[in-house]
Image (cartoon, rainbow, N blue to C red; front, side, top):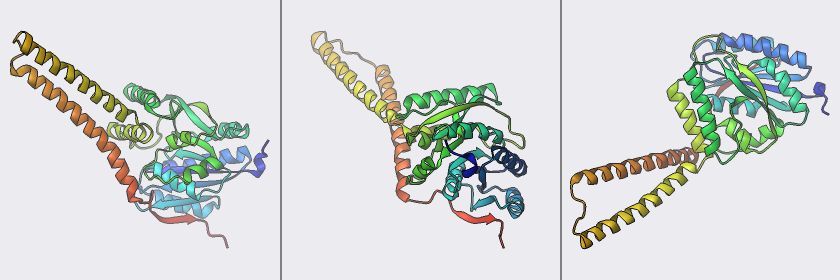
Length: 315
């Protein structure tokens, strides 16, 4: 059994438009880690926030030697913010949290207990989230469709909020792909995982930066990163259409020569052309998504660009 007093836990917080939440997040994290009794570091990643987040982080870092801030040159999205923090973390375990306080820092104590029991990944399992019925329904549908399509087993209703052992963090850090989906990569590594149920509270300050369009983008990122099934489905449909077309041509020829009653009229032709055209466009759009991902990966651009790192100067 590991001795918690000899272990260090790193908290990585992805921040975007969270100026009001940052001080409270820092306070609650410090209180939680002191209660746990472990060594700790707090890493705030300011992902190009247009508000006063950077100034607030400078003030916090000047007062607390256990806190550092990574400032991105622009907004690179939360997945790349987490990646920046993970690469700079030094803890035996790393906890990922969103900066809006919807991931309660106090739950880290439960995560640590499960980690000390031998689990390599401990994730927050959203039993309920404070959101509209439509959004709650869409989230649940996404996770279940995603799990069916994916070639790996990704836990249902689990977000980025999690604790990962150092070996899991090192494994993810070593991966070369640039378009990242952390919760998928976390499952892909294959280490032991366990969930801790919790109710996700409402955002305390400001408005959520998520919307329907962004959620669709997230869904596409997850599906096209961890599933080949869309391509396989299109291949199956193509084969099926080819076979049915063969039967249709055979029936047409048979009717022409046997009864001289081959179907006439333009309606049937229009319906067939529209159907086949729609299938072709759908196939092209799916191929385009995969090709776009390949293009992004071949560019070999970094996940993000760090403008500066802020930490307390020790004389």
